[in-house]
Length: 76
Image (cartoon, rainbow, N blue to C red):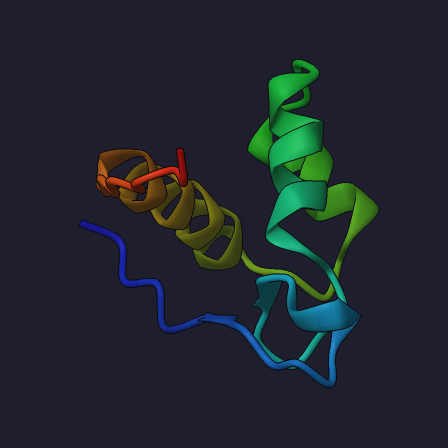
């Protein structure tokens, strides 16, 4: 399992969207590249300040979000 400590949420950075720690690169941006068919190496070429573990942490963060379950009761 890849640790997600390299992902941070700060209301002062990118409107509170999850970003790679120490950058303004959002998890959404990285996932967008990967879902469009780019490889991890493509992402690293586009963002040389990132490491492979940062990209994998974005994937792990998304996986964990997909596992979470919330039940909201809607007003009737």
